[in-house]
Length: 373
Image (cartoon, rainbow, N blue to C red; front, side, top):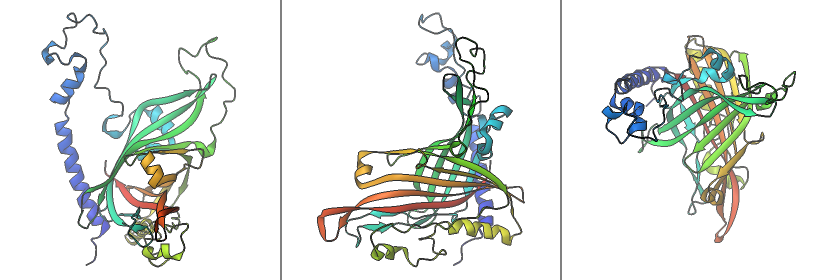
């Protein structure tokens, strides 16, 4: 049975998601009990109608923060033009993105001692929802006489099985942030006066062009990732690279579970799903007008921290990802990505359970998403 047309499937899923957002907005209206509690958080556990009675508590501060001012901008966007400008290539990410049901593919090697080579493949098709929200301001790293400002977007990601016995169940979730780094004078306000702040260099030192973009990732497996890189923009569609998900060692026997080594095989080249998505648009007369690329890698002065269990059994020594933010000729925004996480497994060496050897496996995921809000 042929799979449904991805664009038709997307339209159905977009309608369902927008309906869910409308229901959520009704529940989170300013008059809701939840927001009332937030406004009165400094008075809890007193009754809500005592919130204005400050005289009964001598420790009560005279200043009560307005908890209705969000850390992130309402609706995932930001109305401050100066912040949007400083976000640079990240500004186009703001919003909610969804993929089609079969849009993503995940090559997922897993250690398993009773398997012929000590591992199995659990490769899956998946769909996902990602949200990006700009914070209301900058993060300043001071250098004494100038600063490095990080204009930041928070993101969350939820990934679901597309089919099979676990259809529509959550398979992966993570959150983190994207940073656009620029240099600026220190202070830039009333505190930036002599002699407390030294003279600002003129001209300012330039931010290294291959280190302007940072991705910080928190993964519930027990991994914290810091990947650093750069951005680029150009007209037209990206050239999708061929990925290689085959193990880097272990001989030909390790490659058998992956099937034939050709670019059309998603077990070897998960990025083929990105090219398929582009080809589907071309067949409908839809092209890519402009592309912005975000490319980060932990090997560009980044780092990864892993829990002791992960370090012993499935260590992550490297993370890299590329995002293509594409503006389509039909007015829609499309987001494509490929992500490569190196997994360092401790596997049984031959028939002796007492001897184990470490092997590196690429864990690659790729998907295409469309902005719905």
